[in-house]
Length: 311
Image 1 (cartoon, helix red, strand yellow):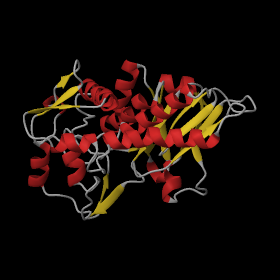
Image 2 (cartoon, one colour):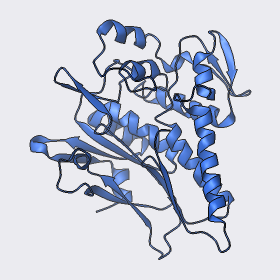
Image 3 (cartoon, one colour):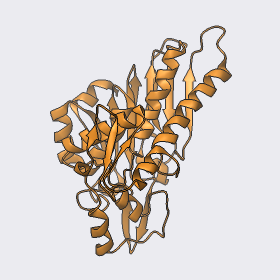
Image 4 (tube, rainbow, N blue to C red):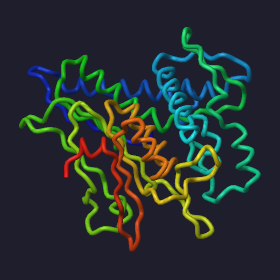
């Protein structure tokens, strides 16, 4: 996945920590083998290369993730779309890196012609997906979250009841720390990553996770500048261009990370107004951090987020 993982866990007496570590890595390796666009032999890469007009049988985990991604795409009106891969690659944020220059309108139009969640048909009974030809699925915005959930399921099977799992900044917790206190995680202040605040350790909010997950999407780590313009890695599938509004980061708290992870992307594309309206309709716990005036940041939190966050 091009990132790191960490797990803080209270091990039962007699537990083999190396066996637990090996099991965690095995779960994450399975996710990579199925859903990575960076691995040419992954199940996802094989689907993307499949001939037009063919049904492709998918592993259960892959099918589960793709099914949810497509349902979110439909519900968000295409603001989130797992078939956005051609545009992600065109803008230089995919596995095949390219010079960081903005593509021309013709190239964007050609890539957009291959994008559209409704192009994929699923066969739930047989765990198959239809490749109509030219569709390139990118699950980077959801597979990492699913990986977090896979690790928690492994820990549950192993008899662990108190843990905090993190994969590339997406987290899910269960139980409590050894001292009996909840797991607390910090939402990074966007400027900290760019050196715009006094300390890189500054956080915007502290959230207690009790059987819940949190995922944060931000534009301050993956971007490029060209012709004096700033281009985020968050591509709006509906326009073919990176989002251009004031969103610096979006944090989602949910029951599991598979749902939290792509919702952050969806909220980022929808923007603070349309995204907040969507969040309120669906009871989503979301925190928007927006670029304000004079280098300051502005917060907008949904009622559901306020209910689960600490001051």
